[in-house]
Image (cartoon, rainbow, N blue to C red; front, side, top):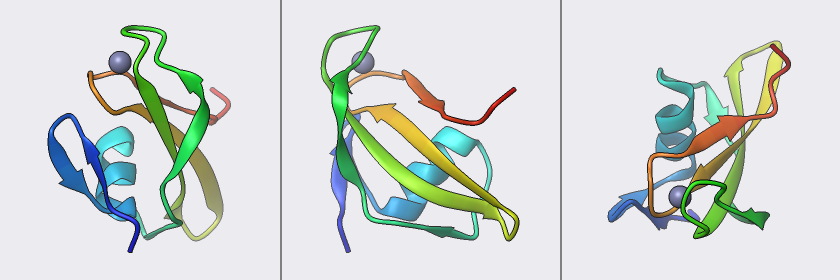
Length: 75
Ligand SMILES: [Zn+2]
């Protein structure tokens, strides 16, 4: 497992994906450092790839220090 501390809490790949997605996900890959800083507070951003359903793969980005988070999903 590749657990990280996000907003003071230990998260697993799945729980990080669920934090950004807002609901449960099927599967998630390892958490990695994203090559970007948070647009809100400038702190480190981590990224995780996950599958919210069998037909979809989404990459999430989440700040380790504040509420900011987003995905690469096309709206
Ligand atoms: Zn931030």
